[in-house]
Image 1 (tube, rainbow, N blue to C red):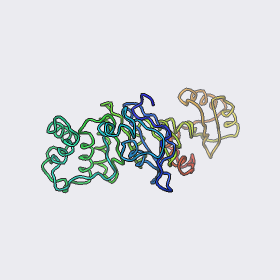
Image 2: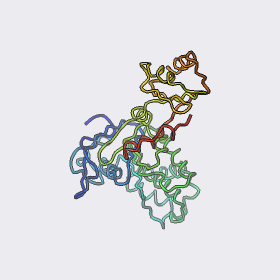
Image 3: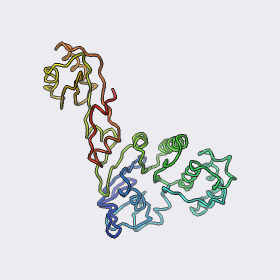
Image 4: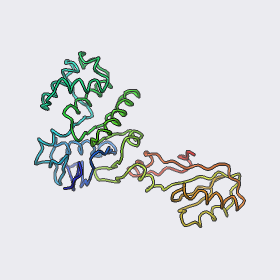
Length: 316
């Protein structure tokens, strides 16, 4: 094992004939916001249940917050917080009593203080005496996040934290996760909201039982698609693409209608040279833009093997 906050080696979980997680190798350092992405049934929730010692692996090893899964499960659970996709609350009890009950289970030293701290932090203090059954889904989600944080865990697992929330509630939850990042906690998120993962996560793992890719969103875009610049011209001549394609830092240069589409390394450094070459060759440049791939493009390419055309995704 390593000094990472989360580390797995060959982590595997089978349910009878179903291979939910297969040979998963992860290393997540302290303070990182890490995203688990994949289609339904890919093993995201199973991975969280394995890492929080709620289920035992079929084989392989995992260590979370310094504790070994399968050997130090009680200590591990005391040092992680978890938001499940369908968090259960006692609907007849007030928000304050719900949190107080769970704080006592976690043996929190200052139960009233911790309960008040997180209710205030999530904007629920004024509703503390109301029954949870009267809360909106967004309020319940915020309360569930507060519950996961009462014992000040080193690692926080959030399974679909904004699923089903209206835009305002989802935004509040995302802002709260961003604030938690500043506390140095390690946060693992599963989500189907790819824009959310792009904004929140330092790195993401895309998998379908097996790991397909792991890196920062920006690096995954670069690895799959490179950087693509579009030169809009008044007219395109075949020699223009030949001229740019001869450059050592250009992977591809092709013409499409009145555009030159160029895939290259470090556009910020090399664009001036390309512009100068085009102007000297007699090209009239109207404007220059870059095709910006979304995390959705990366996800679909990895999971469904459905590349997206440059024309459809051009966003100069």
